[in-house]
Amino acid sequence: MKRKIISLIVFSIASTIFAGNATAKTDNNGVNKIDNSFQFLLNQRFVKHTFQLHVPKNGKPLSELIIDAPATVAVSSDIDVLNDNGQKLNINVSVNDKRITLNFPEKVTYATTKKLLISLNKVQQPRSGSDSIYNLSVRVLGSDAEISIGQAQFQAF
Image (cartoon, rainbow, N blue to C red):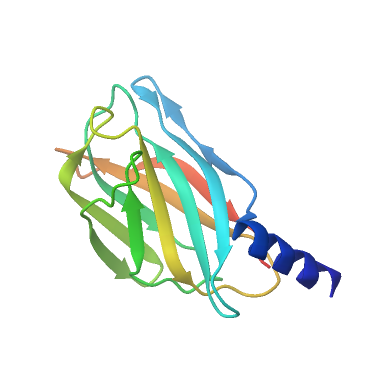
């Protein structure tokens, strides 16, 4: 009961609950960094999982972001991607079971945007249990190889 009251207070004040941490790998071309993982309570059934992805300064343009969702959540294709100016990017979303692929028709480079804010809207997760850990990878322009960039982790309510 105490946790529920605290959650409601935090939700009514800030509409966010900090969801823990995120990790990422780095390489010689720059830093792939995932941070600021937040979880928004939308209603009793759904949450919104949001995280930031830093675009590498010296890397090739990103063509796709691949998100492997954990088995404990149900995801939808309701996804928003914003640049560091808060502008919504044009994306093509494909959901195949627990794998979400975000295709960027326009080049995503450090020159065009330094950070991407990815919001997975309408995520259904269990009320208790283990944290939700998403594995993230990218594809760069001109390559079919998936490059692992880290994880985003969200606590269960």
